[in-house]
Amino acid sequence: MSVGSKATITFWGVRGSIPTPGPETVRVGGNTSCVELRADEQHIVFDAGSGLRPLGRALMAEFATRPLEVTLLITHTHWDHIQGFPFFVPAYNPRNHIHILGYEGARRDLQDTLAGQMESPYFPIALAQMPGNIIIEELKSLEFQVGKIAGRACHVNHPGVCVGYRLETSAGSICYVPDHESGPACTEEPKSVSHVLEANVVDFIQGADVVILDCQYTAEEYVTKIGWGHGSLDEVVRVARDAEVKRLYLFHHDPSHDDDFLEGMLARAQELAKGCPLQVFLAREGDSVVMER
Image 1 (cartoon, rainbow, N blue to C red):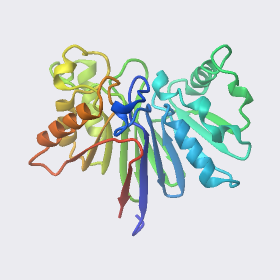
Image 2: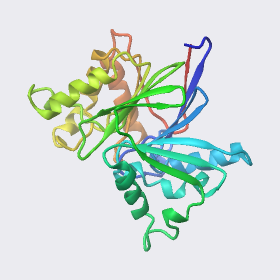
Image 3: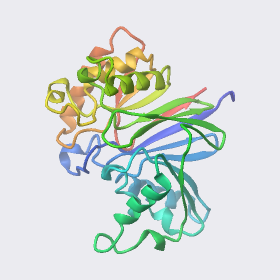
Image 4: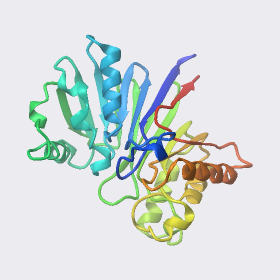
């Protein structure tokens, strides 16, 4: 482990389901899932929601004429996690290299999905016309490597094939689990698939320095959303406490929740975390988190 090493996490999209621009979401943000990690000489992006567009513009301004290498980790191909890719300007520059990783047929299925949303009449430029060096790779193992960073994936409780990612950097561990149903329904039947997946996630995030976790619903909302694949606030905090997580970031905010509502959810989560070392934060678009050792 390097002494004095540092990693930076930046939130570019924190919303779930659909972008929600406007005055009621300006403090927390309205772009869908996209989180940037810079660590150990690697440039990694979690998911390609609409937040990928402002990230791409910022990267092009920063790197100017220098080549850019980015690893893009896709959790699944629901639209709010890929809709920003056609607007990722680094992919239109031939000096740049974009390495896209995913699971379960990702090389073909992910390519088809990314290409499909760019076909006419939906979009004027086809995926094949993007001049950036784009490589799409299907990961065969739940363990993988990005430069010096060891990575792991975990299947989560969400409709279709969906994973969360854990990366071990020299500055600490980060877990990104944007779509996962943590709720009472996942703990009441010990032999159910949802119970097994819940137990897997608790083990997966165990002791992590930073966990970005799906917390779309309040406990009251969850009663009518069971099986939709998203987290219930009280259970999300319980999971983080059980896993002895250090910092929890509530993520994948519901499109119907405005800034004031989300601040109320944060207050509730912080109250539930009292008496343990867990720190709870609201993932906010534009905020950066520094991990340092």
